[in-house]
Amino acid sequence: MRRLHLAGSAALGIVVGAVLFNAPQALADLPVIDPASILEETGILNVLQTISTVENDVKSGINSIFGALGDNSFGTVQQLLQEGFTQTSNYLKGQIGAIQQITDASNTAMSQFRLAVRDAQIRDEHTPSPAACVALDGGVGTQSAAVNAFGMYQALAATHDLRGEAGPSMPSYYGTAQGVASNAANHVALYCDANDQAAGLCSNGQSNPKADADQRFSSLFGSGTYPDQPSVVAAKDYAINLIEPAAPGALRGDQLASIAGQDAAMRRRSYNARMSLAQSFVDQAIALQTSSVPLTATQQQYLSNLGLPAQQNGSLYQVMQIEAERRISDVSWASWMQSAPPASVEREIAIELAQTNYLLWQTFKVALQTGTISATQLAQTAEHDFMPTVRMPAPAMTSAN
Image (cartoon, rainbow, N blue to C red; front, side, top):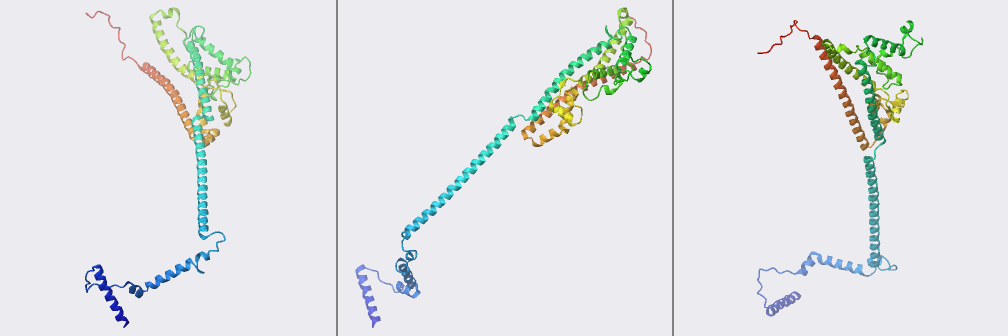
């Protein structure tokens, strides 16, 4: 009976709704859905009711989550959560600020360090090193020694040229015999040896430390710098005995007036030119080794490191030798090179290149002179070997027409 009552009520409702809302006619094939029945049949309604019950328990009663968190003695849960989140946020802000300060301090310290490194680089690039100053002192000393050596060479060459030409007040002016006597007297006075002593030629009758120094090669090339004036004189006398011990007598007066005299004068001028070339070349070797400039402290220390006698002055030959050799054998220079900054090393390389150019220029000058000597020897040999095939009569000097 209850089901019939419900069905009748439903039918009456449909009819009333159709009349009031002008609803379209229901079709028999359309499905009829009951949401409440679906929720109940599937169990979803029970799930929704459980969720609603849990929500009510959370909001109020003994099972309330807010009640589980406390009795609000220190404030409500909302206030405490807000204060907690605010404090956590402040901690994060402080941590970030500290990290920023640490980063700023690190950047500042690194900037100062890089600035200091750059300042050191600028200092090294613009400040001359002690080694550069030493090299400059050596270069100035070398050039000064070169000027002094050139003056010494000119003095020696002028004297030897007058001697070879048998000029007035020179040995051999009155003949070769005068030149021979002058050479013998000079040997006995300065370089008397045991044979001279046995012959009774030596006036002092004692041993001579420079015996025969006028005929020994060591007198010309010794220690690089002649230690005293007698050593310079010994080198000069060795060069004289080496090139021209006694010059031929000079052509004077009526000897030059005749045809034969003019021919002899021509040959004598050629002879003098060749002797001047040979003698001047040796004179340059003497001038190179004559003491002419004070040695720097570094150069003196280098000689001491080699165990050589200490000396205050040096020659151009020795100065160039020291400046070249100390860069390959001096311990002080090698230790400086190991610790020198790149800019100083580059300066040292430039200085050594300049020194190389200087030595090459000196070599070039010597090559020109040795080439001249070779050309002279060739010409003299060709002149000596030139012999006419037959004796030719004098040509007739008649007019061509």
